[in-house]
Image 1 (cartoon, rainbow, N blue to C red):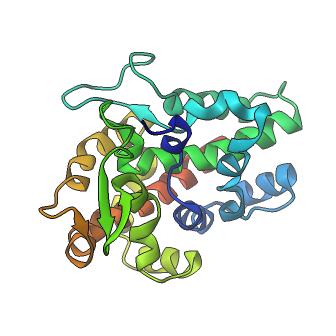
Image 2 (tube, one colour):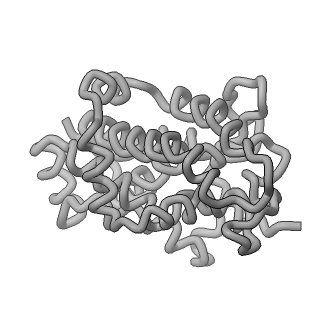
Amino acid sequence: MILLSEYLLGWGNTGHRIIGKVAEDNLTEKTKKEITKLIGHHDIALLTVWADEIRSDPNWKHARNWHYATIPDGEDYETGKHRGDVIEKVKEFTKMLIDNSATNVEKQNALKFLVHFIGDIHQPLHVGNGKDYGANNVKVKWFNEPTNLHKIWDEKLIDYQNLSYTEYARFLLIDADNSRVQKWKKDDLVTYAQESRDYRKKCYEYESDNLGYEYTYLTKSLLNLRLLQGGIRLAGALNWIFK
């Protein structure tokens, strides 16, 4: 039986930082100034991993279900129907950031959770099918090394590219189509989540459970799409909040 805490990890540090860097490069100057007032800087990539770093803190034990959503195949998202609170938490922290009565500490934490959770929603296996703990229970190998499918999507596919997060973000943005980027910024949270519900099918498509070159080739375009969308949509959310 897998530990539930293992299911809570979204993109690894590099993935979250890629999303943060893509977002930062798409922030307005006003948004950068407002974030700097709140945090002391506007390096979104630096903020994105905090929500995972504090997962072992007993004071944040209650946040373990905040990192994911469950939408079974053939279903649409419904608040409270299945386990995982990430969508509702993004809504909650967005409201807190525009609430004049919220304290600076509340807003700082809200921002750090928000930049992480919008990334998590874009990891296809963080919108689980309700059967295998977001594919943590799907045992596979990565170039002959035992692992699970969730970890491959969190870390190994990204690490295989052998790029720093700044290099990866730059490469994603070079070929980004501006018309698609502008559309993505207008999409809502449920759209993000239900895309992951639909895209996750591709994560499970392989003939051998020893994944490697072929799996990387077949999934790279989806991986890059979700990292880019996560960053662009995070920028859109922050620009709206701090407009």
